[in-house]
Image (cartoon, rainbow, N blue to C red; front, side, top):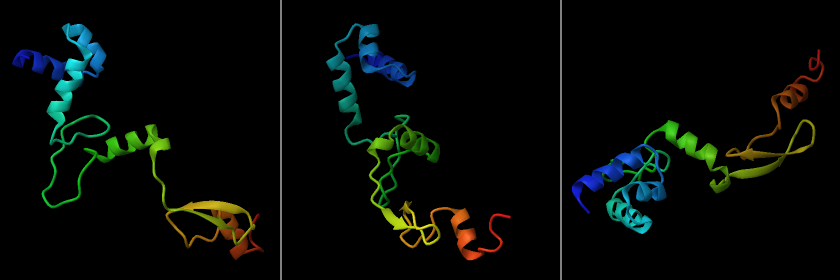
Length: 126
């Protein structure tokens, strides 16, 4: 593969084209384009969302997103892949109903309204 072809593949990928589209436009096999990216990716980390090359900090935590904007965008598109380990099923101290709390096992009320009504029953509602 020539240097010009490699640059063209990177340009087309940067424009958002898929690997089959790149292969078709350049007259290459899809497997050739896939193996090119596999070889390019070895030892390098790219943003999960925008595929920008990430610079890792030596001795630091491994980055998987280039920015908060990309992280939030990826999370919103892949909610089914999120591994939520800190979900707690609780009973509301105000209304007695069941609710889920994410990341806070000490939460007591399902909503702010339940908290207000439980704390100040005479003043709640008017």
